[in-house]
Amino acid sequence: MMIGDGINQIIITGNHSFVDGWTIFNSSTFAVVGRGFVAVNSTFRNTAGAIKHHAVTVRNGADLSTFYSCSFEAYKDTLYVHSLRQFYRECDIYGTVDFIFGNAPAVFQNCNLFPRLPMPNQFNAITAQGRTDPNQNTGISIQNCAIQPADDLNTTSIQTYLGRPWKEFSMTIYMQRAGSNTSGRVDWSGFHVIHSTDATNFTVSTFLLGDDWSFDTGVPYEGGLL
Image 1: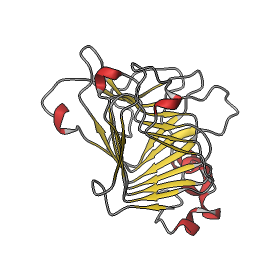
Image 2: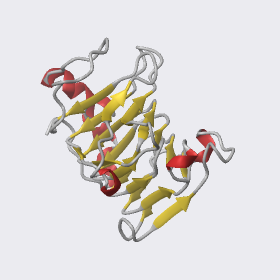
Image 3: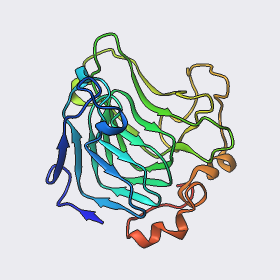
C-alpha cells in the first residue's frame, strides 16, 4: 500500500516518451505489477508534454489493484490500464489522445476526467479500449464520472470524444452521469444504448467481483448501480 499526504502533496514524476526512444510500455513514470496494490492521496505525472506524443504516467498490470483520490497527469496515453482487475475511485485524470487506454477490466467510479489542449490538428479521445477477442472479460467502465476541460482547453474549440474503438472488439461503457446518453453520437457498429440490467454487468461487484476484495482495501466503493 502507498499512502500520500494528498494530491499535489506527494508527486511521482518522470519524462520518458516515445519520441525520446522509449516504447509505450516502458515510458511509464510508475509501473504496477503487485497483486492487491493500493495507492491513496498521490499524484503521478509525466512531464514529457504533448509534443513528445506517447508518454505514460502509470502502467497498471496488477490484479485487484486500487487507486483512491489520486491524480494522473500527462497528455497522450496518460493511464495504461494494461491488464487484470483494476478500480479507480475519486481520481483526477488529465490527458489528450487516448488518455485512458489498455485491455484491463477497469472501473472508474466518481472520478474527474480532464481533457487538455492537444497538439495542432489533433482531437482528444478520453478512452481507447483494446479488447481483441469478444470472449475477453475486459473493458473500461466509466461510472458517475465528471468530464470537464482542463484550464488550457477552456477557451478552444478542440473536439473531445468519449472514446474510440482502438481494437476490433473494444468495450467502453459510460453510465450514470451527464453525457452517458447517445444523443448526437457517431454511428459505429456496436455502439448502442444499454439499460440497467446490462449496465449492472459493468459494476464493481459484477465486472471486477469487487465484493470479494475491495472491502479489504478500506477504500469506499459502490458495488452496483448508484
